[in-house]
Amino acid sequence: MENFKRQVYNLKIMKFKNIFASLLIASCALSLNAQTTNSKSARSAHQRAHQEQLANIKSSKMDRSVINDLIKEDVSKRESEVVNAISKKNQNLIADLLSEANKHIGKPYRHGMKGPSAFDCSGFTSYVYKQFGYTISPASRIQYTDGVAVDRKSLRKGDLVFFTSRSSGKNVGHVGIVVKADNATGDFEFIHASITGVRINKCEGYYQNRYVGARRVITD
Image (tube, rainbow, N blue to C red; front, side):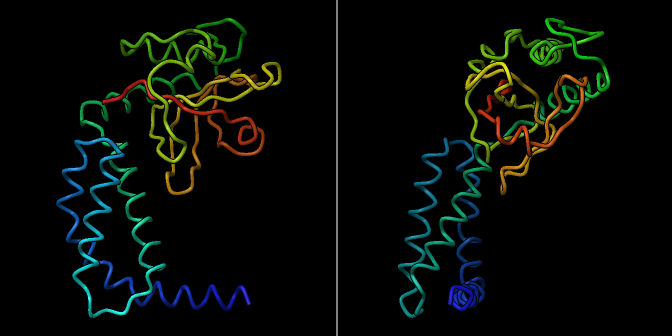
């Protein structure tokens, strides 16, 4: 029965996709203006625009639940674009920052070490950021107060991601730098100084279960 309902729902989605596409085109100008506002005002503006457009299509017999789902999907996508809007200057800065981080792959982990020959986790992140004029705490728990908080589905390259460790209980005990993020799924990869040395890992398994949150230091 569930499969049948899902098939019916998918057919409705296909039926209204083309109609809804025209609505999205009409909202492009609004999306451009939303880049200079915060995500809350962007949500409100897009919702108002879509509701006004829907009100003008009185002759179409649309399934309201399907339309609402499509609106939510579009608003969520555009919110993410606004949150992740970044200047060309900072795009280049983040690219250089990650290039610097990658130079240290394979270097050993040493507790309390801040580089450049060996690192602990927070020593690595603070060292990399310091090369570009950003001073962040050498302790992961305090780094978790630097910058601004970022939702997992709004991550971008260069963000700091935090985890618990075997010795930290429920508190922050480990930190890395995002090198790749999929905002549709919340999946990401990060570079960090693990006990086996500086390396890149996906947030899965051990790290998935210990993920705490993220902070953005380069905010423009």
